[in-house]
Length: 484
Image (cartoon, rainbow, N blue to C red):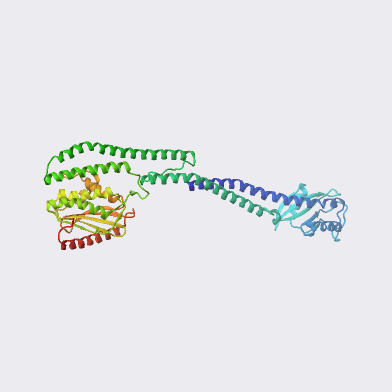
């Protein structure tokens, strides 16, 4: 829009300058020509009093030389032959016309002016000749010739044209500058509005647009700010609704906990009570998270973070008890140092519970599984492997997780969807492959800087993570007993 406005203003100003400058330049040239010939007529008139008194050659010669054009050789006098009284010209010859000064006009032109009795301008070599008829005392008509050089006809025209061109260029430059400033005033509010829309689409819900600029853009800014406020309000209402719905689950959970307490002793009763307690904890977490959730930061990540090693050790401690009951061998590696990741603690715990729950749900009792953590500098790789039958179609499993559709095995895929959303919120991803234990390997790539890693580095990270995982699993196999 800015450059379009500049181009339009440039075209309009150029047309106006041309429309006025070209005719004005022609008028100036015509005025210079009129001035030169007017001066020639005035100079021709200075010799007229002498011609009205005498036609003597010597007198006329002195009169011609006394004038400025005569002194420069630009003035000539053509006196016709006498009608009756003159017997001899000044040179002692026969009667004939008298020419004083330098002739430039042809005799034919001189005779034409004498007969016509009015001044005439004729073109001669090097310029123009003004032929002015003058009456003599004898009644004859003499012709005064004034030479006007071509330079005097166009004197000052080039300078005037240069000034006109300079004024025209200055007008064009000034109009372009003004149009550019006006364009900036119109374009900047539009650019801010577009940038704010992009920021809002990326999750920065606090983005607002200053209400300035032309009337239309101010109206658009007001509408955008109102829309952003509505989006924030809708998200707040959604969080409140999730918290309210979760809060309603507390009553049936209380009944379930009381009934579980009356089951007596035994492994099944203890597992039931533990499951009820875990369910209550998750409901409380949902309520607390829904009420305390804040808009995302500029990078699109959650403001909260956690120590991945600590969360993984905690969740593995929870699932190890059930693994021991089912006779599963558990391997854990890479959690001996602190690894900070930009993921909230409840989200990482939910993702791990979803993956480990799938291991217990879809593999036979006694199937071993392992969890390996690797820090690659710009990302954290978490590998969850098992020795089960594996997944026949990993792509279909991921697609089912993304869409939420149930598969042929009865799985809804929501567990994988939870894990995928956690990984993608950091710029990472989720992949399913074949593990070295013979079953399924789920690899979670968690970015540490919010930027999706390059393709080459991601491939390198997968190879490094799997190599480190194999090495650590071999070391764990040499150790005595599982890690709980």
